[in-house]
Structure formats: C-alpha cells, structure tokens
Length: 309
Image 1 (tube, helix red, strand yellow):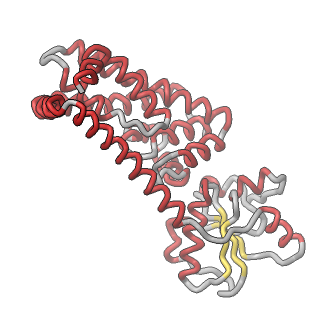
Image 2 (image 1 turned 90 degrees about the vertical axis):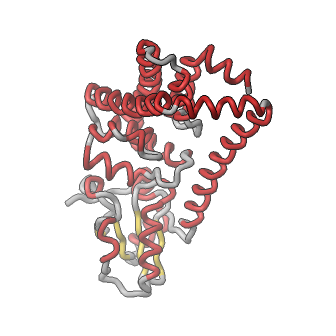
C-alpha cells in the first residue's frame, strides 16, 4: 500500500493521464477515485499544481474523445455498434445516446461524462452525424473540465477525510491493497452482472433478414414495425414498415390480428429496442412477434432496398 501511495505522489500526473485516457477510451477503469485522491494530495493553495492536474485530465480526455469522434466520422454507425457491444453498461445503447444527442446536439457533451455509458458513444455519434470538429472540441473540453474539476475540487474539499482513509489503508499494509483490489473487482463484477441480466432480458426468438426477404417475395408479408428514432426513420425504412415512436409504445395499437406475424426492428446492438417493444406487444396478447436480427443495418448490408416518405 505504501508503494502505491509513493507512486501516486511521485508519478501522479502520469497516472492521472493514463487512467483518464483508458477510461474515456472505454475500459472499465474509473478515473474519479484517482482524481479525488490526487486533488486531496495537492498542497493547500498550490494553484499551479491544481491547474496542471486539471489540464492533464482534460488533455487525456480530449485525446480519447477525438479518437472516437474521428472513428465515427470515418466508419459511421459501426463504431457506435461496437461500443455498445463491448460496454459493460446495459443502458449505453445507441438509442439512448441518439435521443439525448439529437435533442441537445454538441452542448450535451458538457454533461456527457456525468451520464454512465454516454461519453464514448456521444463522441462517436458526433463524428457520425457530422458535428463540426471545432464545436465538438469546444463543448467536449468544457465537459471534461467540469467533470475532472469537480473530482479535484471534492478531493481538496474533503482532503482531511481522504488523508484519514489513506492513512487507514496504509496502516493495513497489504490488506489495504487487497481492499482496493477487492473494491475494483466488485465494481467490474457488478457491471458485468448488470449487462448479463440486460442481455438475458432480451432473449427471445428472432427472424433473420433472409427469412423476412423470402416472406415479402412470397407475398406473405408480415406486419413490420420500425421503432427507431424519428430522425433515423426519415432516412428510409424497410418497405411496408409502420413507423412508431418508442416514446408512444405504451399507447401502441396495431392494426394487426393477435395471431398475425409481427416483425419489429431498430438499429440498436442486440436489437435491444426492438426486443423491448416485442415483449410489450406479447404482453398485449400478440403471439407471433419477433425482432429482426441485426435490424435495418443488416437489411441494408444484405443489399435490400429501403423506401422513404
């Protein structure tokens, strides 16, 4: 434990830079504890050190976020899909981020880091939809400064409490290090368990793009429901699909028989939104409801056409 504190004191800025960079890239390595401890270790009234600590965190954050921004600009929605699949946060679906970013635009980046699972995906989305890089960097830098600045301020505000806690851990020696490791493992395990439960809740029968194509070609067209965000729906939909807003799902009434075939699709990884709507419809008495595997992205990738208003 004493060796760990020595490293923090001697290489504090480097550790902060690496920790913030890795977290913002997407790894489950929370940087807030490091920032709070670093803030507590600042010499009282040493504003230069506080400024340098804040600048280090902001630069590390910007490097990670600009990387995701450029990846989104180059590879589009595939970047966000990948982020959602590897994320340990069950609420970090493209839909949630799209809804917030579509409503507030680049200014939403100022609070993005305070919303679990939002920051990395928002950076990729900003690049995907063509947000100007200057606007992205401006608002993202403000968000990073607010996020890191709050942690540093909390560290200085509760420096005595943090010092007492560090002294207790130092007294415990190896057991103190073990407690820190155990807390980290518990954090990762809880996130993994939340994601596992989330994915399990989406488990149900699905239909492939090829199956849907054959049904349409054979004249046995099912009732198709598009549950994407309105902005995405305007770009085109699967021929014959009925578009609805996910916000209106609780009042959704379909002009389809209860035993009729209903296909629901979205553009979210794991068909999360489609599966949720499908389960809702099944709860309403519809017996043959299936999400489309891969959503509209899989439909387009297979070379099938879409229709617009």
